[in-house]
Image (cartoon, rainbow, N blue to C red; front, side, top):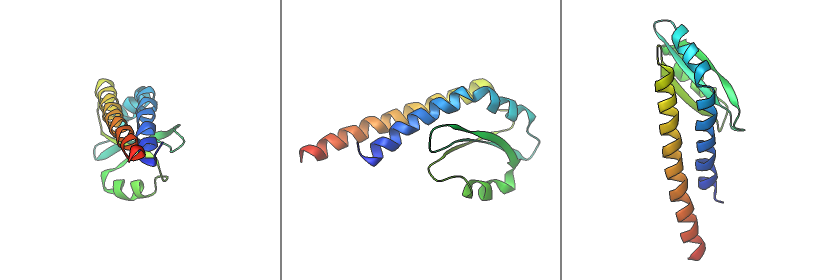
Length: 112
């Protein structure tokens, strides 16, 4: 399996991990203060790495410190559980499409 296929397959799993943590993410969204953004992270080893809220102006610096290979998703305050679950589904669906395309490209390059 190519690196691109592996990354896409892992993104599918990361979306599943994030969906399982959706209630915790929604709770943090409910508690976020005005001017804050909620950041949920799935580590490169595909475990839920946590959820935190931080001032919007600190977002860039915080994301720069995220661990390499992690999946990081941001949410606005008051984002509902249903919206978080919908976004996780969409992330997983997009990753699945990438995985299918990568697998097709891998097969094509193997026969060339």
